[in-house]
Every structure is written in C-alpha cells, then in structure tokens.
Image: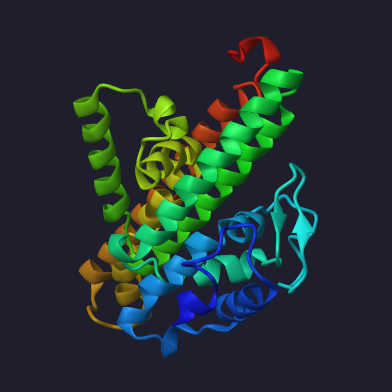
Length: 283
C-alpha cells in the first residue's frame, strides 16, 4: 500500500505525479522506526528505489541546501538532476536506516540505485565526450559515492557490523571472475543486473566512507569492557586497578591506530588528481 501510493510500481523515477510525490515525501520524512512491522521495511526500500533522485540529492552533503529542512518543493542539482522534493541529509539517513536491517530489505533500493547510476553515468559520459568537460562526470561520481556512504553508515548503525557488505563484495568478485568481465564495464552494460551494477560502482566509489564505517566499529571494540570496568566496581584491589589502567591504555592506542589509518587513507587520496583530464576520457 505504501509503495503503491507513492508511485513506486507504475511511475518512473524523476517523473512522479504530485499526489504520489506528496505521499512519498510524507512517508520518508515522518515514518518512525518504532511503528514499523518487519514486513513493512522492504516496501520502504521500494519507495527509496523509486525516488533515487531525491535520495541522491539528500545525501549530497556538499549541496547548498544541505542545512535546510526537508521540503515538498522541486529542486535542480548542480549537474541537472531534478527532484520533486528535497530531503535533508538527516532525513535521508534516518529513512535509509528503516530498511538497512538485511540485504533482502535493501534489495529494492540497491536495484533502483543501479538503474539510476547507469543512466546518470551514461548521460554524463556522453556530455564529456561531446564537450570535453569532465566536471559533470566528476559531480555524478561524487553524488553516487555520497549515497553509498549514507547506505554504509545506515547498515553499520542498524546491524552493528559490515558482514552483509563483505558478503556482497565476495559475491561481486566471484561474479566478475566467473563471467570474465571488468567491474567498470558492468556499470554501463545494459544487460547487467542493476543491483550488481550498483554494487560494482559503489564499492569503487565509497572506499573512504567504508573505511570510516569500519574504523568506527574498530574504535568501539573495547568500549563495552572499558565501560564495565571503569563505570562500576566489578573487580577491586591492586590487580584490578592495574588491569583497568592497562585496558584504558590499550583503548587509547586502538583509537590512535584507527585514526592513523584514516589519516593515511586521506593523505593517499589527496595525492590523487581531483579531476580526470579530458585527454584521459576515451571516446
């Protein structure tokens, strides 16, 4: 009912009716996790998969309207993407969390993002070949990377780990190996599954976001034990005191090492040219 009323089944993304868009906007900005039955979550993912334009706009943390509240008004992105309403980054992330509890529930969203990314990249690539300007293509990749970052953050928050993402990556590597095709060519191939195309593309675009998500899990690994030993007298005496001090020191070193990992990645990324020269774009 929710997905049908939002136009998820019979309307095209980017061309929703005012009635459907208004209903979808209400669902996406007001639905509370505490009110949801387990069977409802996959239908919310169907809505997200039908409104990928709006999700991508909401995840664009570099957009001029990122600090504004969600609003039932149309907008146009810096590279021409038109949305029927605007979502704040906060509402975008909160909505993604509602169905990030399993791969099955995420599937309709991932499939929608696959179709959406294939179209965006094809259009931007055509523009680059025609004009030699790579700016639009650069903005497209940045926007899609932001969406994947939001998705990873939602999965981490809801599931507590990235085991599901690891399995998706393993399945993707196996698919590429078994079919003997390159990951990049999969994104634009019209015969490629939209879901697989999104996994292939987003995996390459979201390295930094994924490292941050994994580092957050690593940083918190000793928090439960540290909280237990420092928050209450579960063990007393000189030995207990030395143990607590050692645990605290190890927790500090773990956090320092995790931060160093992120810093090293960011330094490496800064050494990579921000834009691809037109001469490197194949016709």
